[in-house]
Each structure stands twice: as structure tokens, then as C-alpha cells.
Image (cartoon, rainbow, N blue to C red; front, side, top):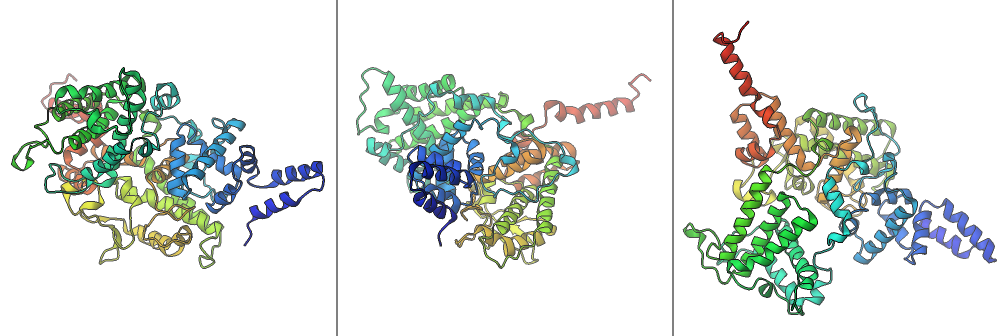
Length: 569
């Protein structure tokens, strides 16, 4: 079946015997086409106009929707490319072409900072012109999502291209440095595959990806900046991690420390980010000296503790962790922090949004999964259920995006929806093993049933998948960025604050420890339920200020002293 876009192209191609008339008709048709601005930009940049068919197939409905989608990534072009590849199934070359065209439109129209918030489009939701609600608690219109800057330091760093913005390994590093590429592949296996001689337990691929990224940043810096500014440095295709980190003595830490110091002075990194980078680089050093270490953790020794360079890296990491503990947060908490009651109000508003959509649309879910209204309602259902699950199971975003019907998301013997995790299904599984069932409220049963049976098929497109939540435009599994966008945009819509999924854990713990009379047993149970220790709950997730934490002690002393008649009447 020929698409509307293809028909439009046919008219433009065949229209006009004379040049003036043809150009006039072409201009007229372009002005009326929903993707006229996008197509005109593609033509101007000599990019294939077939990209319009691709974006139509992804569910976009107009040029303005494309621009709204792209504006959130103007300062992070690599994120936009990755999103197009991972969430929309674009080939890398087409993703690059899309990025070029979209950013050209943004620049031409000067819309980056002036888009109306009502035009903003969620990465993983279909634009809706119907069903938008305005509860009494949320009458005021929030500042545009793009204009809420949570971390000014990070924004300035992204704009400072002179500081070596793209200092990581180039995308074609395997061609330029094949030996380095092979070693990085081996590094990933070192991290993830168990072996008899291993001193550390294997880690999950998602965690290993982070350490691999740290290694690539270091190696890219070494090639592009360190070697380029150091005398007598000649880089060949045989460049190796073994030649960069030459021996196991402490003096070999100099190049690694130089990288950290460069990040501090040029990139202005936080102590938290420095600690994370050092953790990844320590893993790289362990890989480098895997064959030289004779430490045996089975007899109480620290892994690789006989390698002086590893001990030095651990010292650097301890210092960064110490500074992290006392450093102020780099982001503006006021622009993302909600009280727990405010978050619950957002969920109520999303529930009302679904109710209004259902009331204003008579949808027959038997019509087919490509029905636009059905997809719109399915997206609203999904958004509401995701935020509601976070309220009942305040877990990491990975839990939500990896839920699989029948495996990790199922009904118990009583017909109650639960989340069931084995050791490999959550971050701290190696420590806590099989997790107790994470039970969702009984009142959510009908909503979840209706979503799965009637609305979720609209999100599947032509794919068969057991993942509970899906990308509305592609039917793919949600990505980490998708979950972030869903939560952040929903909270911003009703509160003006850009709350993120991980912050929800902090918000709940802070609420429970500061605004309730929970016993120590209940707090310990909550920690186990959330997959961390009571110490982690107290030290990392509790965001109360020192003044708030000592307030009960002050009140207690006042009561004790008043009982003894110390106070003067």
C-alpha cells in the first residue's frame, strides 16, 4: 500500500511543465505536507528523502513533533544517535543523517530555547491532543522541560568543546588500533566470564559495559591528548594496554593519575564521578596484571593485593570516596526533589488522565494494533502503571524495563501480581540471593489486567515479546533512557520538577525515616525489600538534613528537662 508521503513525492515529481509552475506547485505541496519542513531540510542537505518514510513508520506525525523530540538532545548529539539506533531500529548511517537534519532545523528556527512546553514530546510516548488534564493541584503551567536545568556544571561542561569534549576512543578504533580492540574484548571477558584462576567474581554485562566505557575514555585521552602533547610518543597499530601501563610498580600510576587530574582541571568532574572512573580503571589494571598476580582471596588476601599499582589505585579511590562523602551535590536538588506525597499526587493525576482518555474515546481493541487512538491510550496506561509500580516497589529502573510476563512479572497463587527476582535479575542479587516477592497492591490488579489484555497489543507493533513495557513507536523493550524520560516528564508535567527514577528511592526512604513512626524492624524490612542494607538506607538514601535528623533528640531532651522542672515558667 502506497503511503501518503510516497503519494506526495509522486505529485511533486510529476507536477509542472514549466519550471516556475513546477516550483510553485512543489512549494505549495511542501507547505501543506506534515513533514514539509523535515523534507525540505533533507533536500537542502542532500540527504535521502526516504528518511521521511522511516520516521512515519516510527509513529512521528509531523516535523514539529520531530523537532520537539530532538531539542532535548541538542547538547548531547551522541545520545540522540544512540536513541535512534537502540529504540527506533535506525542503521548507524541513517541515525547520523537524522541527527544532522533535525539539528539543522533546530538551528534554523531558533527553537532550542523557545519551544512551548506543550509541544514537548516524550521519547517513548505518542503525542496526545486529547485527554490532557488539569487537576486543581496542578493549575499553574510549569517552566518548559528544556529550561529546567538540574545540573548547571554539567551543562557548562557539555558546552565547553574546547575542553576535549570528544576525548574517548573514535568509533573506528578497531581499524586504527586492532590490538587495542582485541584487548578490550578480552577485558570484557575478564570482567564477565568465570574462570578457575579468577581472583574476583564475574560481574554482569551491564556493569561491565560501564567499566569498558571508562577504559575507552582513558585510552582515547591517552591517544588524542596525552600522547599528542608528550615528546617522543609514536603510536602505531600495535598500541597496547600493556605498553601504556608498562609495569606493576607504583610509578606506573602516573599516566592514570594524569588522566584523573586532567578530568579535574579540564572537565571539572565531581568527586562521585572520579570515584566511579577510578573503580573502572582499577579493573583495567587488574586485567593488565592478571597473569602476574599470585594473591589468593580464598585465604583471606585482597584480590591483586600483591600488585603495587593496584594498591595505589585503591588509595586513589579511597581518597575520591572520602571527598565524595563530604562534597555538596553537583545538581540542584530543589529542581528535582519531590515530597513523597507530591509524587503520589502525580500518580493520581496520571490515573485521572487515563480515565479521561477512556471516557472521551470509544476504542474497540479488536480493530488492530496500528490504531493511533489505541496506541495513545496504551501509552497513557503504561505511563501510569510504571509510576505506580515505582510507588509500590521503589526499585531501580532496570527492574521496570526488564519485567517479563510469566518470568519476573507474574501472579501468585492468590491471583496477585508480583515481581519475582532471582540473583541475576537485580543489582545486589549476588549479596542477597533470591529476592522475596515484590507484591503490587490488589487495587492495581484490574488496571494491569486491562493493560495486558486490551491495550499492550497496541504497543507490540508486529513483534512478539514478553517484556511488559514497550517502546510505543517500535515495540522494542524500554531502554534506561526511556524509563528516565517517562518518569521525569510525568513529574515535570504536574510539578515543574525533573525527578528521576533513582531519586524515588531516596524520596521514599527520607519520607519513611523522617515523617513516620516506623520501627527499626520495619526500616530493616524495607531495606531488605528494596535490595540494600540498613546501613545503605541510613547513609545513602536518607536525604534528611543534619538539622532534621537531630530534631527528635532536641525534642527528647526538652521533654526530659521539662519533666524535671528545669525550665523557668
